[in-house]
Amino acid sequence: MNILRLPQTKSTNSYAVSLLSQQRPPEGYVVITDNQTQGKGLETNSWESEVGKNLTFSIILYPDFAAEQQFTLNKAISLGIYDFLQNKIGKVKVSVKWPNDIYLDDKKVCGILIQNSLIGNRFDYTIVGIGLNVNQSIFLSDAPNPVSMKMITGIDYNIEELLEKLLKAILLRYSQVKTLPKKIGQDYQNALYRFMEWHYFEVKKNRIFGRIRGTNEYGQLLIETENKPVLICDLKEIKFLS
Image (cartoon, rainbow, N blue to C red; front, side):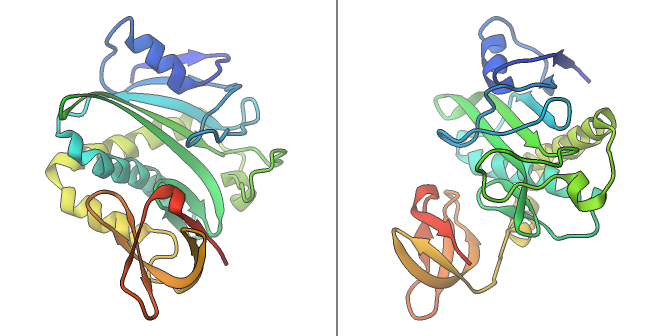
């Protein structure tokens, strides 16, 4: 594996973008750090990570399929981490909270930030940023529900061993985007957090009672309500409630 290890960096995704402006590393190239000082989430969200306790890294990919499969790529990356955790953690339920947060029961263990660069209807490159909580046991930020692998199992993990296995799981699912797209879609749906469970949601500032039916081809979330048609939700239009 091609791995660039940095003692410290603001963001492995930002470092990978800078690297790509100068050279073309091989596909699967990994930028990893023990200390990510300005880890990013979606939009303005930040990612808390104690130095040396977690996996904070980015993978450089060169997808050779159409740009319209961006959400299938998102599904594949999410499932790679889901598969990895399914094999490592047997005490709790692993799920994917739409679109790509990874949950252990009702707590977030992993965040994913995917940055795509497109030329026309094709990918130029993709950077997959991953923050997986491994050995951290205390979280100081105002994030509502963080958890780590160690907090669930009590095991102090070897970070290097986990990285190798996690990368293999992600790249296996990535290889299925072209060959097994229907399987990716079905597996993702089955892995969804609260799939087909009745819960309260806030959709476009309205409180509703419904259940997740899956996603459409555009990556939007489908919510079935008790007495209305299925609602189609974009990312900032929905909040998960109790």
